[in-house]
Amino acid sequence: MDGEPKTKPESPPAPAAKMARPRKRGFGSKLEEGRQTFQPGLWSRLIGIGVVLLYLLLFAVLNTRHVRVSFVFAATRVSLIWVILLSLAIGLVLGVLLSQVHRFRMRQTRSRS
Image (cartoon, rainbow, N blue to C red):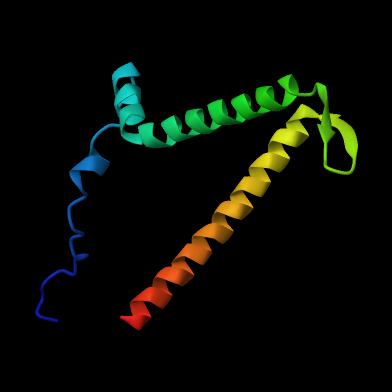
């Protein structure tokens, strides 16, 4: 209308990263990417868990020999691993119960003071 020719508005310049040629990924860049994504804490935990599971598996397999368990009024023969696991379970339950009794008694003595 003023007599000026109509032109398209200029688009903003493209970012430099888009203008650059894509680089070939060499060994160095792959190594650097590996360093950034490697999680040593995760791998050390997984290896630790694997070692513990392997130990427990070997513990169970190597303790399959049958033993005679004598209760006061009866006796039976079971695998040694079951005796060990039963003893562990009884010990855990008694430990928790005794800690609760101790905690209850400590509360009682504090409330009297």
